[in-house]
Image 1 (tube, helix red, strand yellow):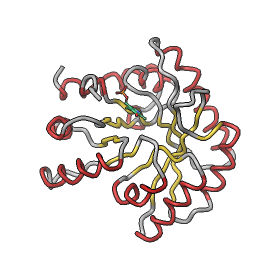
Image 2: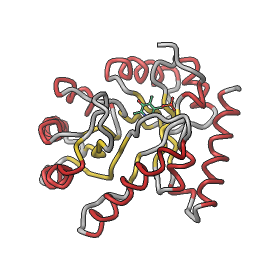
Image 3: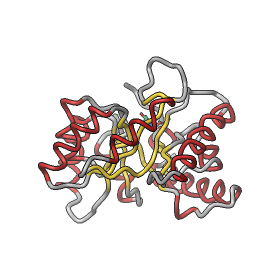
Image 4: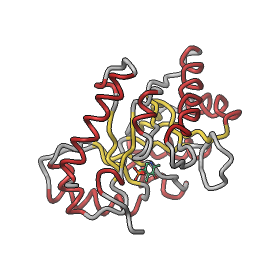
Length: 231
Ligand SMILES: *Cc1c(COP(=O)(O)O)cnc(C)c1O
């Protein structure tokens, strides 16, 4: 499928899932995941209306952002970091990304804040929560979330906006539903206590419609738009 057609279809599915759940579709943002995707295809997506791009590696994102700003100087898009971040790349991440979805430790938050203060930039972030036992997944454990949120709230230049999670991959997206419910539940409880967690980043190509039914405000979709990645 052409990139523009795939984008249209995702937007249509977002509308349908929002309607099914009685939610306002305007509160659901599509993060177009462009990791490993070539410049030409990303450009095609932007020209077809993509407004937020998601990348998982700092260096790869830097090259693409530089190139695309040169090629499309009049078009402004947001860049989000969706992959795990090492502390030694915190400075570059603050330079490059509008929103960082993957903050999972107090020390990383501290480091991001230090650079954000130096640059005079309020850095928007989400806290990544780990809801499964998979050792390959990053994120803060459920029982340590509140401590991390408290720590993040103390940081002057860090703007906490919500939570992110990556459930295990299931062939049947229904199997991911309990994980989305769990993240929504955690966010609602924290919201009641006054934590500013409006955003829920959850759902990928395979399961974003289910994630929307469960309250996602940001879905991260790559393969469905660009086709299979060949790493
Ligand atoms: C790659 C990636 C996605 C997109 O996954 P698709 O299955 O290609 O839609 C979403 N979120 C994160 C964190 C990713 O690394």
